[in-house]
Image 1 (cartoon, rainbow, N blue to C red):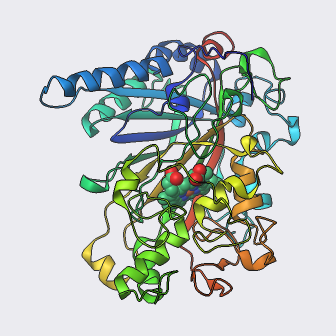
Image 2: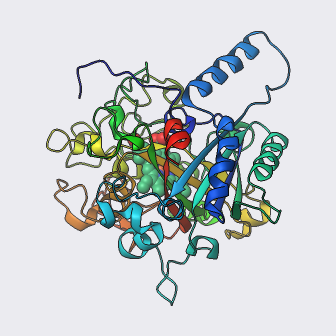
Length: 473
Ligand code: HEM
């Protein structure tokens, strides 16, 4: 970690990266560049719409102010960001092999489709392609994210952007290949993903930006998420890449009725203290042990056998855990639980630094709430899931490593003493999902886990700084 003070130019960094665009609803617009020269000149009109980190922070202050004064309604806030894929850079005639840390061999240059086939373990079609929606099997050059507080505001902004790029005219510089609308879930489920668990709690805090530092997982240097900043593991990239970040997008469908049915069919009979559980409590504990947190967000490493909403509400305590003293035990939290697989905290420290493995997760839910018919039948009828998005300065250290070397690897972490019985991440692991540690009284028992999350698309993008968008693209 650096000791020199870090100063970040918050006016140069796209807002979603460090602060997340404030949102109730978002459009993800995937596009192809049709006319590179016109795209460049249209971009000049688009850039003023981009929300930087500094502007997001100001918006937050305005919202707080609005609430403090007890003013009715919402402020019509809207935020836009843009990212370009390798294929987009090629169309624009920009050599991005210097941008990607491993040059032409980098997963960014190869694209996520190739990575899904070779490394990520996504299910495949008979033709060898990943079993994705067609739109994602073809080249995608860029992604525009529009974020706002109502459908009307993001719809209006979408039309404005389409007008800038001449979409629907003979002189369009881009073609929309797929648009997906995501919505934060309604009512008390706001902030919870579709299985019902509170999400977005344990993002790393970033030195030089966040003032409240996470107590449990260490904060990271900004170079773990921003290219060219202190702590960037690849300091050799060209200047124009500075303050940009790699955006990983995954289109992840969630089988919610099937997940609920699985929990109902495998309730734990007793908790780790030997106390009898009702079927309902037994199912709840099973779900919490698969994720590593209760639906409220309370970490099971701190409150292992019953939910504790007060703990979940306390920002100081909800991240203050490290699986300490549990390096070869899964009494409190299974080794393969989603949050332990994707951030093993003290399981790895101090032998390995996990700073290079931290990602900033964003994204939003898509699809409707589960209907009664779906719940009763235990079968998904309507598509729903997560538009998973995360930022990092190095995809192979970040998302790809988490997915391939941790979530998909049965004998990770390596110190458990039980090898492959440790198991795959029960949510996102690709392969023969099975894990031990779900029953705290018989942790050696291995339970096969059905499929609840299906990848149906994705791509790797780069979100350039404002300066790079203005001067180099
Ligand atoms: C944490 C759900 C996909 C990486 C979490 C949490 C939930 C969750 C409920 C706990 C809340 C929190 O700690 O913020 C899901 C669902 C997914 C999904 C439903 C798919 C539909 C992914 C993917 C990755 C990932 C694809 C990366 C490969 C992480 C990380 C954490 C996390 C790094 C934080 C762990 C920590 O620092 O303690 N996820 N997740 N997740 N997830 Fe996921």
